[in-house]
Image 1 (cartoon, one colour):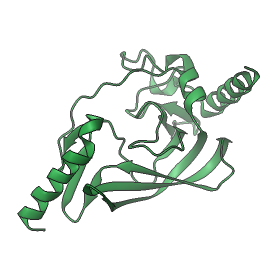
Image 2: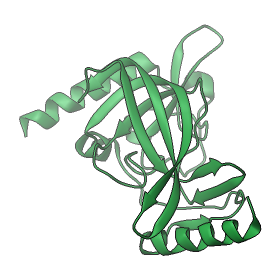
Image 3: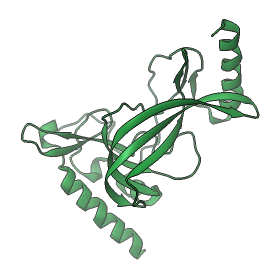
Length: 202
């Protein structure tokens, strides 16, 4: 792509996203920068999510979206739903995120989570149109990994152990437990089910 096209795309990105105040870089691939968000609690995740599930990323596909202001890059992430906990009965869930890389042009938005095929995740998401459907930007996206004994355990997106739902919202603090002691997926799912039942009583 000619450099003039790169500059034009960059200017378009800036105009389209300035109101969001979340732009990191619209040309090339931006280096990672520290980003902070208002912490969310487990109750926030339950109350704000339209859909909750455990699933695997099966496709990550960037595309160009034409708008009145110009063109922006978005990334469509497709999940195979292994456990539809709330708000879905589908075997597939698809979400669009602002930013991505296409044809040598990268558009990075601070705080947008990254995905790759094979990621095993617990997802708390909204169905409304937004630059990032994950509740709490990255906080509503948890990692599931098997330990040495084959037990599925819950970690933050950054790989920090989750001792229990109450630790969500305090995840910026240094972890004080080992990954092997992180909460079991089965126990975490039971806590989600209990919290949903309690929320529906209100």
